[in-house]
Image 1 (cartoon, rainbow over the protein chains, first blue to last red):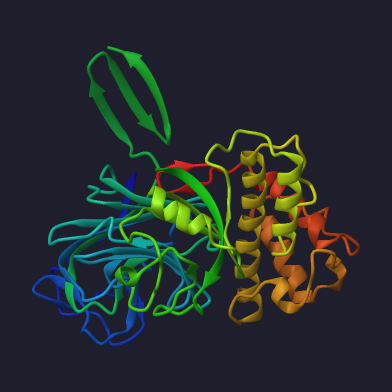
Image 2 (cartoon, rainbow over the protein chains, first blue to last red):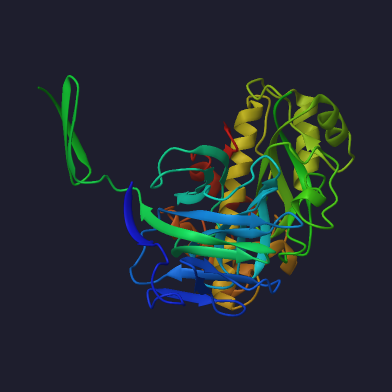
Length: 206
Length: 211
């Protein structure tokens, strides 16, 4: 897992130029958190400062997620090309919803009260090939608890970003996104020494 | 209880407030007005047949919810054990159910297990998902399926609109599937089955379960 982009929303009062957003009023940054006015709209912002690989992930730390109904909340998007096409995962203090929007047609892929979020929880979504996965409390895209995993081939590419869906309150403390390439580095662990270069690992005994 | 696959109709018009979703499987807890009949805490996930009004849902329901859902006249519930062969009666019943929903099923036989059947059908679902999305991109409209345009399983590739033909070609190419089968006289039925021959090998995830 490699982190390709991140934002802790600690600078300014609006999203930086690395983001491209659509839907409703613009995102704002308040007290170091990305937030939207509770205007009942859907709004996305995708990181467009790089060209994303098709296999990608996005993770956000939520703050004060609260809603009066399901299918709403703050979260992440991935393979997004804008307002009408993306995979999206939102959650609140009651429920979650993993969904896809394909040229404006909205399909719920999985939803329910089996997963909910509180301040400090991380919401994570990824797309690898035709596998779409939602997790809770990953760290830098790793680990966490599986919420659901589905197979879907509707959307092949796009960008990762953040998502707002008519939440009554809440915001995003930080966000990061990445791909599934192996990180380059040396890891020493017990009896074996692994050296990673360009996705290849060779194991050699110490 | 145990993981099971259900073929169910799609409800919802396709907006965020009224999303396309599997009938019976959501409740108000998932969104105001989404009337389902199962426990909202139940874990499930679904795959759609592109823009067509059918979904396959994978879920581990309680015994009571399973009985309720499987008992619905418009639900086709696969057996819990996918690794048994279909009987001839089951082949006939499955063919009738699926063909009426524009899902090719003439290829089924008693040599197939339910898992073979499921993977074959899910492969067609994958292709239709990509093809309908590609069509939407090319046409600049909301995604629709060829069946919504009036085509049938026996329609020929050559009878589809030029945009639709290109969408199917692009979809196959995006999966690295050769497009040789997409000849003017090839039927929709044959092409979908050909696409599924390759796509049925992908891992099909339904929550924590795989088919």
